[in-house]
Structure formats: structure tokens, C-alpha cells
Image 1 (cartoon, helix red, strand yellow):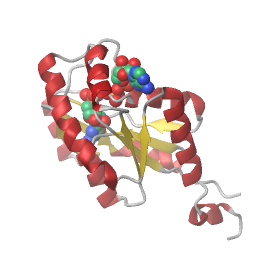
Image 2: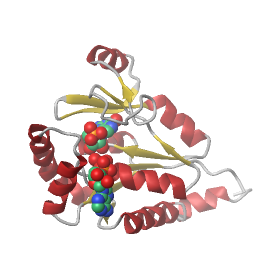
Image 3: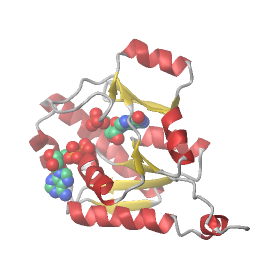
Image 4: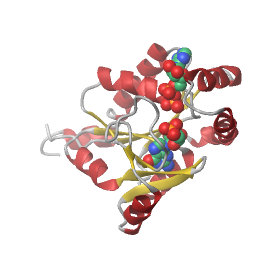
Length: 200
Ligand code: ADP
Ligand code: 5GP
């Protein structure tokens, strides 16, 4: 068989819905996944490591990277900048790895304009109340920041119908199983499978 090329999967969803939690579990379950580490100007939360969760940089460095066209996409979110470094995404796909981008909806739109084959998955909470509870109980954001993130969440949930898939993170195990199934199905698409057969 010819070596398959990796695919890119965008995961979006309101802050606090459980994207990091679910993606960590998915990474344990599926080998051959590459998690794209974004650059951000936001301050690290307790326990977050530079280069693992984010590349934590200042606004000037962010502007310099933007000037050198190093981002596949970028966006402002609740007072900070976030961007996906292009180089590592392309290298991982060339190696045959699937790439996971945990990004918000403006960045998702930019990528889909440039690369329409990208698969977009939206993760939603089981209820609005539960989203508020998770954001508050996580204990990483001030009440003011939580309100700003919840305001953004309303806008994001209104955009969810334009995504390819919709996963409700009620239970982590179920959400991970659904994500796993989506990745698996996307690799069974006829156009991709045929190109994997030698001599075709
Ligand atoms: P995000 O990355 O989307 O901002 P996190 O992964 O940080 O969200 O999760 C936010 C909070 O919700 C965390 O405290 C996490 O432990 C909790 N959480 C995640 N998924 C679930 C779930 N299915 N049920 C209950 N709590 C969850
Ligand atoms: P947080 O500050 O909670 O880690 O992330 C805030 C929001 O920024 C989340 O919706 C997350 O998906 C998004 N995000 C993280 N990295 C990027 C990125 O590189 N680009 C864009 N557009 N959004 C990102």
C-alpha cells in the first residue's frame, strides 16, 4: 500500500466545554496523532508547560511571526492573540500523521478557506448550565474573564451548524469514542482509500 497522507481535524467549542480533556484522552487512544501546539500571548495557567500546551510568547514576538507569514491562521480571543504555526502542521501531515487543531471559529474559517478538505468538529456541552459550571469549577479564570468567555460561547454555539460533525461532551468516554469514530470514517473515504492502493 502507498503511505497515506495525514488529515487535518479542527476541534472547536466553547471555552470550558472539555476540549483539552477529551483531546488528551484521544491522544492516548490513537497513535499517529499530532497535536498542533499554538502560539499565544495569554499567560500560562497553573500546570501549563511552554512548548507542550502552548508556545507562550509576547505580543511583539507574535507580530514578528505574523510578519514572517509563519501562521496558518490566527485570531484574537478575549484580549489575547492565538495562532497556529504552519510549518509543524505540514511536516506532520507529510509524515502521515493526523493533525489536531484546537482552535476557535474565526481561525477555523480561515483554514477552511485555504484548505477546504479540513474536517471540522464542534464540541458542545450537554447544557448551558453545565458549561457555566465547568468554566467556574476549573478555577483558572477570573469572574470577569468567565463572563467574556461565556459571551463568546453564545456566538460560537450559533456557528456550530456550519461544522461537519457535532459531538456533545456529556461523558468524556463517549465523546472520545465519537471522535475516534469520526477520524476512522474520514480515512475510509473512497477518494483517499483508492489512492492508498499501489499501482492506482
Ligand atoms: P476546554 O479545553 O474546552 O477549555 P477543559 O478540558 O479545560 O476545557 O475542561 C474544563 C473543565 O471541565 C475541566 O475542569 C474538566 O475537568 C471538566 N470536564 C471536561 N469534560 C467533562 C465531562 N464530560 N464531564 C464533567 N466535567 C468535564
Ligand atoms: P484557552 O485560552 O482557553 O486555552 O483558549 C481560548 C480559545 O482559543 C479556545 O477556543 C481555543 O480553541 C482557541 N485557540 C487555541 N489556540 C488557537 C489558535 O492557534 N488559533 C485560534 N484561532 N484559536 C486558538
